[in-house]
Length: 43
Image (tube, rainbow, N blue to C red; front, top):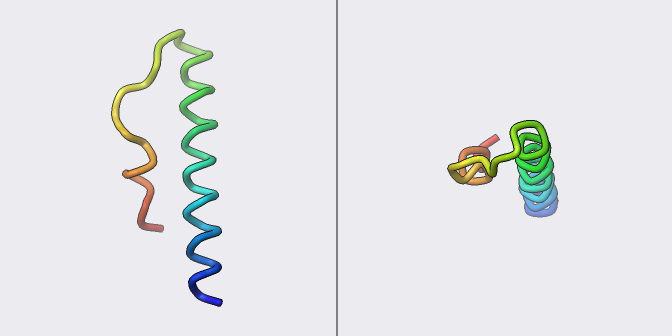
């Protein structure tokens, strides 16, 4: 059960980071630098 929760959390964080990067790109017109998903690996 713990592994399932961890996998779900990681998927959520990656999806959130992708959506956030897309939103920033739409607002600024540039692709954000840095790897956002790595920064959010640890809850």
